[in-house]
Picture 1 (cartoon, rainbow, N blue to C red):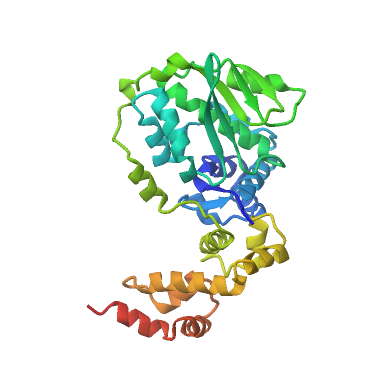
Picture 2 (tube, helix red, strand yellow):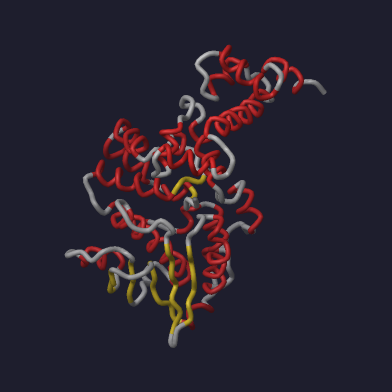
Length: 337
């Protein structure tokens, strides 16, 4: 089983918008409905299932009373919202180099997504396909993707630039003019991907002087992302368990919901990789506990709470079963020179 993922930076300003317009309680409900932990409000250096992103967007639209939250946000979105990856993309000397940087490194932003610059007779087609396209919440994801893609040529050609037309892989709708108004061009719905044309001569446009900023290398992006997107079921489940540590012990049902799977389906997927959810959760919690115990001033009681145990005694027994030593002894060993 391969589950497409995407960086949590894609949540952008939506959490702040929901809290501002609907309140903290509504924000918590949207996160819970998508199976995502609240720590993503502040921490974005994690990868989340694309299905969870769509659920979050659908929940955000419901909370805000708008079916087109992505369309409303489109005029304000930029690839720079994605942190160092966006800065690296726009660091290209020309528009063509910037677009090629996006193609070559999209794997650092999402797993399974497809981004291409397709030569045609008179121009090139800048095209993108979301790995988990379709279903509730996807229309807004497509609007966001189109806006972020458009921001790359706009950074070189000016904010007034718009393509001649925009293709979207969403169903036809009676109020297409709303989309055309947001993007300032003709819109074609029901296509196979998100795409728009770019004239060949524009690819040589140099980066504007005003856009000069600190250089960002590919290694900077890799360090910022810390790791590549999860590639296997085990890697992705590990990521989701790590995300939920501190909010109680993450259970199978909660993690399965974030993956848009049933608990039994997830169990079978892990079994196919010779792993059980219980053993994987224990391994992740022990790994995190070891990291925390090595911190000066971090007590065993605090560590127990951080990794989801109700009492230090329960934590100590589980830790000893996994490592062969007590948390207290392990901590004392870390402080020795």
